[in-house]
Image (cartoon, rainbow, N blue to C red; front, side):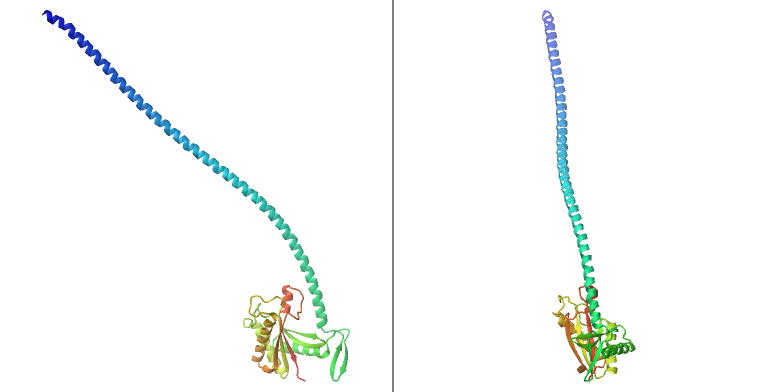
Amino acid sequence: MRHSHRLVPLFVGLTLIAFTTGCSRSRAIDRSKVLEAENINQRQKMATYEEQIRQQHLAQDGAISREQQLRADLLAAKQQADAAGAARAQAQEARGRLVALQNDLRRSDGELAEVSRKYEDLLRQRQAPVVAPAPVVAKRGGATQVRGGGISPEAEAMRRDLQQQLASYGVRDLNVEVRRENGAERVAIVLPDAFKAGKATLAYNPRAVKAVVGVGKMIREHYPQSRIRVEGHTDSDPIRSSGWGTNENLSRARAEAVQSLLTNSGIDSNQVSTEGVGARRPLALGSSKRAKSRNRRVEIFITPRS
């Protein structure tokens, strides 16, 4: 019994020590868990901070890139504005030069028109019949000679007769004019600009074909024994793209086309001769459309056999 009383306090003490030790160990475990939870929380905060820092870096890089692009756009816009300003200045200068050139061209056209008018007046004075004063006519061996710039009565009579005869055949679009060359007079039936540029065929121009055929019928019935000469004329533009080579060749081909129509209308081919004059005998001076149109022509001369 005495021994049992001694063991009780010892057991109680050991129990208290064990309890105390167990409590300390429990508190240590709890503290460790708290620290671990705090550590996890800190790591999560650090990860969040790092993600936010990364996003800020990306935003900063984007802002820097946009700034650089804006600076480049601004520089390009400034260069375009400078170029546009220079272009406007050049355009303004070009408009000024254009206006000056247009004024020069108008003055040149006026001067050319005046020169052409004077030249054509001289041609008309040379070719048109003189009404007053009457020319002085002298007879020599049955032939009439004209002194001065007038047209002989014989040439004028033939001109009028041809004009009337052509009208009776329905040919009213052709002029009949008197040509004076080297003192001699010839009466010409004038086929005006009837060919396309660089061409020597009348197949596309039925009006001109009809007129030439009418001339052929008139010659066959009223001047059956006459000699017929067909002369082709061109303007002064050089031959560039067609195969004729020269204006003389082109004018000769046009004269031959008219010759073919005349012989097809019943005139003996031995009566008709041709010549290509080219641009050597212009009726109008200058390079205007009107002048070129007058110079592009075929002339038909009728010479009665004596």
